[in-house]
Image (cartoon, rainbow, N blue to C red; front, side):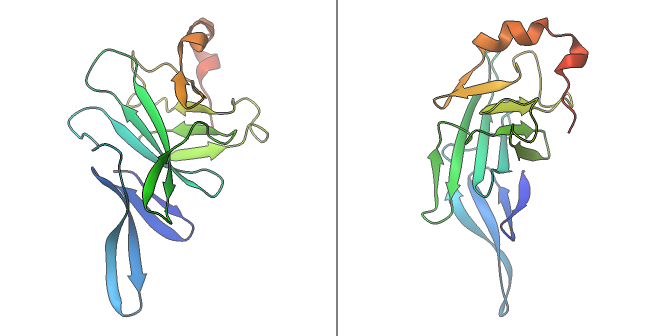
Length: 165
């Protein structure tokens, strides 16, 4: 399950929730629910969820596969730590997300100009990409938009597709 350090605390996603490790001087560390996932995370399908520090906001990317041969569904949420809810978002705040099996990273296209704003890039480790995963995934009003960019992506030589951090 995805884990990360964010704002001085340790967070993880389980099959149902985003959780945080609560610590205090008089109690042993314990897990506490921060927010329920919008849908249960399936460990039987190749679905993935990814926690991302997006410039000081905790975000979650839900990559739903459904075991079908259709393009994957991507939904992005703000994990609202104050109200304990997952709020759907329509953009990545002008940033780009790079997600792999174990890590996720948010970068600004101003600092990394070869990336596109509001785009999700999948790791090239053989576990994140498959025949149904076309990269990058551009969010347009919160909806993953793949078809417009498919021909451009497929026309690039393989060595131009690789993005090294």
